[in-house]
Image 1 (tube, each protein chain N blue to C red):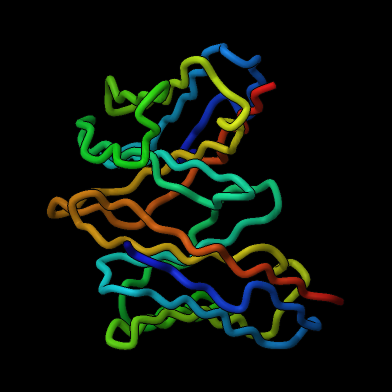
Image 2 (image 1 turned 120 degrees about the horizontal axis):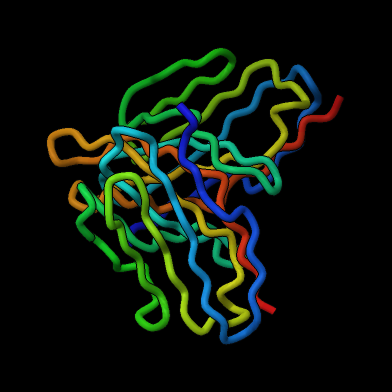
Length: 110
Length: 116
Protein backbone atom coordinates (compact mmCIF):
# COMPACT_ATOMS: atom_id res chain seq x y z
CA UNK A 1 0.00 0.00 0.00
CA UNK A 2 0.93 3.65 -0.03
CA UNK A 3 3.56 4.66 2.50
CA UNK A 4 4.47 8.04 3.88
CA UNK A 5 7.75 8.41 5.72
CA UNK A 6 8.52 11.55 7.67
CA UNK A 7 11.90 12.51 9.07
CA UNK A 8 13.19 13.33 11.52
CA UNK A 9 10.73 11.98 14.06
CA UNK A 10 11.69 14.79 16.41
CA UNK A 11 13.83 17.91 16.24
CA UNK A 12 15.04 20.35 18.87
CA UNK A 13 16.21 23.80 17.82
CA UNK A 14 17.38 26.98 19.43
CA UNK A 15 15.27 29.97 18.53
CA UNK A 16 16.53 31.52 15.32
CA UNK A 17 17.80 28.29 13.78
CA UNK A 18 16.39 26.86 10.55
CA UNK A 19 14.64 23.51 10.16
CA UNK A 20 14.21 21.14 7.24
CA UNK A 21 11.48 18.52 7.53
CA UNK A 22 11.19 15.69 5.02
CA UNK A 23 8.33 13.62 3.67
CA UNK A 24 9.04 10.67 1.37
CA UNK A 25 6.43 8.67 -0.46
CA UNK A 26 6.36 5.37 -2.28
CA UNK A 27 4.15 6.02 -5.33
CA UNK A 28 3.09 8.96 -7.44
CA UNK A 29 0.49 11.22 -5.91
CA UNK A 30 -2.18 13.67 -6.96
CA UNK A 31 -2.41 15.80 -3.81
CA UNK A 32 -0.11 16.73 -0.97
CA UNK A 33 -0.58 18.85 2.15
CA UNK A 34 1.52 19.95 5.10
CA UNK A 35 -0.28 20.45 8.42
CA UNK A 36 0.64 21.89 11.80
CA UNK A 37 -0.83 20.64 15.06
CA UNK A 38 -0.34 21.78 18.65
CA UNK A 39 -0.87 19.23 21.43
CA UNK A 40 -4.61 18.85 21.80
CA UNK A 41 -5.15 21.21 18.90
CA UNK A 42 -6.70 20.94 15.48
CA UNK A 43 -4.91 20.42 12.17
CA UNK A 44 -3.96 23.67 10.48
CA UNK A 45 -3.22 23.47 6.77
CA UNK A 46 0.11 25.08 5.98
CA UNK A 47 0.44 24.21 2.30
CA UNK A 48 -1.44 22.40 -0.43
CA UNK A 49 1.49 21.59 -2.69
CA UNK A 50 1.33 18.54 -4.99
CA UNK A 51 4.29 19.86 -7.00
CA UNK A 52 6.73 22.74 -7.10
CA UNK A 53 7.63 25.30 -4.47
CA UNK A 54 5.38 27.50 -2.36
CA UNK A 55 6.20 30.17 0.20
CA UNK A 56 4.31 31.54 3.16
CA UNK A 57 6.16 33.89 5.48
CA UNK A 58 9.04 31.94 7.04
CA UNK A 59 7.79 28.65 5.60
CA UNK A 60 8.68 27.07 2.26
CA UNK A 61 7.33 23.83 0.85
CA UNK A 62 8.99 22.02 -2.05
CA UNK A 63 7.58 18.88 -3.67
CA UNK A 64 9.57 16.96 -6.26
CA UNK A 65 7.38 14.25 -7.74
CA UNK A 66 10.16 12.44 -9.65
CA UNK A 67 12.18 12.10 -6.45
CA UNK A 68 9.06 11.19 -4.44
CA UNK A 69 9.74 13.68 -1.71
CA UNK A 70 8.42 16.86 -0.21
CA UNK A 71 10.16 19.16 2.24
CA UNK A 72 9.07 21.87 4.64
CA UNK A 73 11.65 24.52 5.47
CA UNK A 74 11.21 26.76 8.49
CA UNK A 75 13.54 29.71 8.64
CA UNK A 76 14.44 31.72 11.75
CA UNK A 77 12.46 29.42 14.03
CA UNK A 78 10.44 30.84 16.93
CA UNK A 79 9.21 29.19 20.12
CA UNK A 80 5.67 29.45 18.77
CA UNK A 81 6.67 27.10 15.92
CA UNK A 82 6.84 24.24 18.41
CA UNK A 83 4.37 21.46 17.68
CA UNK A 84 3.86 18.55 15.30
CA UNK A 85 4.20 18.87 11.55
CA UNK A 86 2.37 16.30 9.44
CA UNK A 87 2.52 15.59 5.76
CA UNK A 88 -0.44 13.95 4.06
CA UNK A 89 -0.70 12.51 0.58
CA UNK A 90 -3.58 11.76 -1.74
CA UNK A 91 -3.19 8.96 -4.25
CA UNK A 92 -6.64 8.60 -5.72
CA UNK A 93 -8.53 11.39 -7.47
CA UNK A 94 -11.78 9.52 -6.99
CA UNK A 95 -11.64 9.37 -3.22
CA UNK A 96 -9.51 12.33 -2.26
CA UNK A 97 -8.58 10.63 1.00
CA UNK A 98 -5.31 11.59 2.60
CA UNK A 99 -2.72 9.18 3.98
CA UNK A 100 -0.79 10.77 6.84
CA UNK A 101 2.79 10.38 7.98
CA UNK A 102 3.62 9.95 11.65
CA UNK A 103 4.76 13.54 11.94
CA UNK A 104 7.82 15.47 13.09
CA UNK A 105 7.69 16.86 16.62
CA UNK A 106 9.48 20.20 16.64
CA UNK A 107 10.62 21.89 19.84
CA UNK A 108 12.09 25.36 19.64
CA UNK A 109 13.87 26.52 22.78
CA UNK A 110 14.28 30.18 23.70
CA UNK B 1 -16.17 31.98 7.38
CA UNK B 2 -16.46 29.93 10.56
CA UNK B 3 -14.46 27.01 9.23
CA UNK B 4 -15.50 23.40 9.72
CA UNK B 5 -17.69 23.07 12.79
CA UNK B 6 -17.80 19.90 14.87
CA UNK B 7 -20.05 19.16 17.82
CA UNK B 8 -19.76 18.15 20.53
CA UNK B 9 -16.11 18.94 21.26
CA UNK B 10 -15.99 16.28 23.95
CA UNK B 11 -18.17 13.25 24.51
CA UNK B 12 -17.98 10.62 27.20
CA UNK B 13 -19.99 7.43 26.80
CA UNK B 14 -20.29 4.21 28.71
CA UNK B 15 -19.37 0.95 27.06
CA UNK B 16 -22.24 -0.23 24.89
CA UNK B 17 -23.84 3.18 24.46
CA UNK B 18 -24.33 5.00 21.17
CA UNK B 19 -22.41 8.12 20.11
CA UNK B 20 -23.39 10.53 17.33
CA UNK B 21 -20.89 13.09 16.12
CA UNK B 22 -21.82 16.09 13.98
CA UNK B 23 -19.95 18.00 11.32
CA UNK B 24 -20.85 21.17 9.43
CA UNK B 25 -18.54 21.70 6.43
CA UNK B 26 -17.40 25.05 5.11
CA UNK B 27 -20.15 26.62 3.03
CA UNK B 28 -19.65 25.81 -0.64
CA UNK B 29 -17.47 22.77 0.01
CA UNK B 30 -19.03 19.66 -1.49
CA UNK B 31 -16.45 17.13 -0.26
CA UNK B 32 -16.62 15.93 3.36
CA UNK B 33 -14.16 13.57 5.02
CA UNK B 34 -14.05 11.82 8.39
CA UNK B 35 -10.76 10.78 10.01
CA UNK B 36 -9.82 9.35 13.38
CA UNK B 37 -6.69 10.20 15.40
CA UNK B 38 -5.15 8.15 18.19
CA UNK B 39 -1.72 8.13 19.76
CA UNK B 40 -1.10 4.56 18.65
CA UNK B 41 -2.52 4.59 15.11
CA UNK B 42 -2.05 8.23 14.19
CA UNK B 43 -4.46 9.74 11.68
CA UNK B 44 -6.66 7.30 9.80
CA UNK B 45 -9.16 7.92 7.02
CA UNK B 46 -12.68 6.70 7.71
CA UNK B 47 -15.07 7.84 4.97
CA UNK B 48 -15.70 10.40 2.21
CA UNK B 49 -18.80 12.08 0.78
CA UNK B 50 -18.98 14.09 -2.42
CA UNK B 51 -22.10 16.12 -3.17
CA UNK B 52 -23.72 14.25 -0.24
CA UNK B 53 -23.15 10.84 -1.86
CA UNK B 54 -20.96 8.26 -0.11
CA UNK B 55 -17.90 7.71 -2.32
CA UNK B 56 -15.40 5.80 -0.20
CA UNK B 57 -15.99 4.15 3.17
CA UNK B 58 -12.96 1.87 3.01
CA UNK B 59 -11.67 3.07 6.37
CA UNK B 60 -14.86 2.51 8.30
CA UNK B 61 -14.99 -0.42 10.72
CA UNK B 62 -17.59 -2.73 9.19
CA UNK B 63 -19.58 -3.12 12.35
CA UNK B 64 -21.03 -0.45 14.58
CA UNK B 65 -19.85 2.55 12.51
CA UNK B 66 -22.02 4.43 10.03
CA UNK B 67 -21.94 7.87 8.43
CA UNK B 68 -24.53 9.94 6.65
CA UNK B 69 -24.80 13.26 4.89
CA UNK B 70 -28.51 14.10 4.68
CA UNK B 71 -27.90 17.59 3.30
CA UNK B 72 -25.03 19.75 2.10
CA UNK B 73 -24.66 21.50 5.45
CA UNK B 74 -24.04 18.60 7.77
CA UNK B 75 -22.75 15.08 8.14
CA UNK B 76 -23.01 12.65 11.05
CA UNK B 77 -20.84 9.79 12.24
CA UNK B 78 -22.64 7.29 14.42
CA UNK B 79 -20.99 4.64 16.54
CA UNK B 80 -23.26 2.00 18.01
CA UNK B 81 -22.39 -0.04 21.07
CA UNK B 82 -19.22 1.97 21.73
CA UNK B 83 -16.14 0.12 22.97
CA UNK B 84 -13.08 1.48 24.81
CA UNK B 85 -10.99 1.02 21.65
CA UNK B 86 -13.26 3.55 19.90
CA UNK B 87 -11.81 6.28 22.13
CA UNK B 88 -10.12 8.77 19.81
CA UNK B 89 -10.38 12.23 18.35
CA UNK B 90 -12.74 12.17 15.39
CA UNK B 91 -11.93 14.79 12.79
CA UNK B 92 -14.09 16.12 9.99
CA UNK B 93 -12.64 17.91 6.98
CA UNK B 94 -14.12 19.57 3.91
CA UNK B 95 -12.82 20.74 0.56
CA UNK B 96 -13.89 22.15 -2.74
CA UNK B 97 -14.47 19.78 -5.62
CA UNK B 98 -13.28 20.92 -9.02
CA UNK B 99 -13.36 18.76 -12.09
CA UNK B 100 -14.43 15.81 -9.97
CA UNK B 101 -11.38 16.01 -7.71
CA UNK B 102 -11.15 17.31 -4.16
CA UNK B 103 -8.49 19.82 -3.25
CA UNK B 104 -7.06 21.34 -0.10
CA UNK B 105 -8.75 19.87 2.95
CA UNK B 106 -9.67 22.03 5.92
CA UNK B 107 -10.13 20.32 9.26
CA UNK B 108 -12.48 21.00 12.12
CA UNK B 109 -11.40 21.06 15.78
CA UNK B 110 -12.43 17.44 16.28
CA UNK B 111 -14.61 15.59 18.76
CA UNK B 112 -12.76 13.81 21.54
CA UNK B 113 -14.67 10.61 22.30
CA UNK B 114 -13.92 8.80 25.52
CA UNK B 115 -15.54 5.42 26.12
CA UNK B 116 -15.41 4.31 29.72
